Amino acid sequence: FLRMSELVLAEKVVLIREDLNVPVKDGKITSDARLQASLPTIKLALEKGAAVIVCSHLGRPIEGKPESQYSLAPVADYLTDKLSTQIKQPVTLNSDYLSAGVTIQPGEVVLLENVRFNQGEKKNDAALAKAYAGLCDVFVMDAFGTAHRAQASTEGVTQAMRQAGKTVCAGPLLSAELDALTHALETPAQPMLAIVGGSKVSTKLEVLHSLAELCSQIIVGGGIANTFLAAQGHNVGASLYEADLLDTARDIMQKTEILLPEYVVVADKNEIDFADFTGSLQNAKATVKAVDAIASDDMILDIAPQSAEKLAEAIINAKTILWNGPVGVFEVDAFGAGTEILANAVKDSAGFSIAGGGDTLAAIDKYQVADGVSYMSTGGGAFLEFVEGKILPAVAALEV
Ligand code: 3PG
Image 1: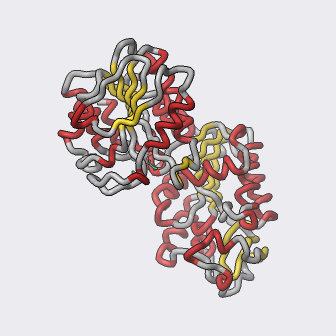
Image 2 (image 1 turned 60 degrees about the vertical axis):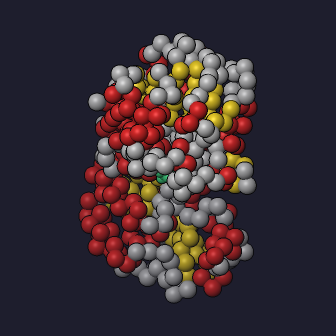
Image 3 (image 1 turned 135 degrees about the vertical axis):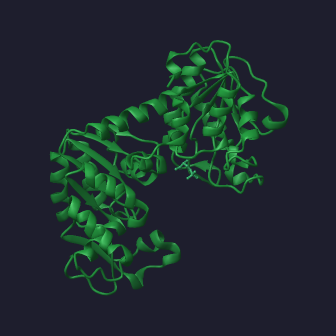
């Protein structure tokens, strides 16, 4: 497909679809990783002399019911701040673009209000896609994090642009994501190792099957590890695990080596308030136990340091490392050592490392290991679907 870097954009009105879906709490952006990743694309379009319209979704609002908690207003302020030397006037947030269009000059940036406020966005309505296409001369798909969704502002607008005989291309962020993931997955330097954490095997089942084909070893953590421990016959006490997936876990263990901890960190379930899980864990007692000594009230919440150090050796020796998901409740320091030790091993390993998913990026941030990670993906669901070998519809539309 065509890449934005190859195009002449002077005097053109360019619509860039970014994934600016960042966590916002009380009107404040709590992680700007995705915003930072989108800045080079917007800056490049400005340098090329374009008038730049940016669009994105934020969260999962009910369509047709704009709610201020899902407004991109904090993102407009963020962009104004970060682009201050490139733009003549602040980034404006435009909410009536479907009725009034967008008036814009080269060197300016307009941010469209949350596309999911528009009826038909999620079901990829053709008329809405056509309306987006009508706003611009060139459409740039740069939202890797949303490329697994065939929605009006991703796949639909791409088709509508083509029907109107207008140019569509991939933005630099999308191109970089696809290049890095292809590099890691198509011809991975061996041995390849994956770290897959998170609470449920069921959400990572397909990715575990795909990774089992590619990797010689997989480190599992969180609720996923508990399911594997249970599949091996260990009593996991009150830990989160999926009893109906024990056979699936055994199948995966036939295909590749699953590295499980010998020692874990547990808390007594009676000390935990499930309505305020991480809050209550701040005061819960953390105890290291062997995996064959778990009591019925114990909840496994992390890999113990002595086991994490052993797993770290495998990470250091790997030539390709793919990381998705923390291995413990790392938001609470008493249950974060496992994730911290593995994060540092990823940093220290000379292998090519690729990490994706919101929690994983938050852990990388917390333990300040970003410098040692070869590539950090902005994708969560899109990252997993790519690893699973699925076709991302918004990328496929660019390739037609
Ligand atoms: C994500 O955060 O994974 C993307 O922005 C997609 O969001 P969605 O799952 O609400 O479509």
